[in-house]
Image (cartoon, rainbow, N blue to C red):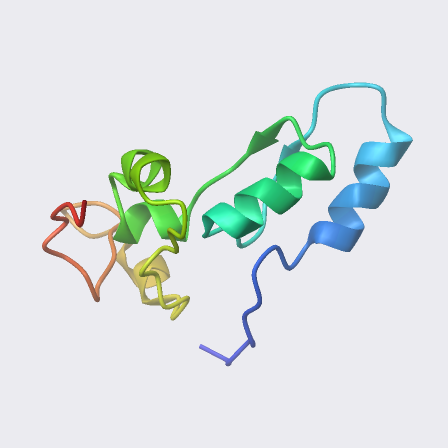
Length: 103
């Protein structure tokens, strides 16, 4: 894969313009992976937050976020999970495949 630099909430500007242009609930999609990032999105008026790669590396992410105010997903944003889409086990994190809780 080509390297794309990661920063949390990377579609925030574009998603904010869409949210401002429509009269319905809006789901934010794009790199949310920490309590700080979640709070920023909610403060900016998003109704829901879609979780993808962060949830693959931390299946108990909602519990961890609730229990740890400074929570940040262990997802490295390496995109290796994309290559597992057709894996017999299904899409999964290749770095943290034990899928054990960190709480």
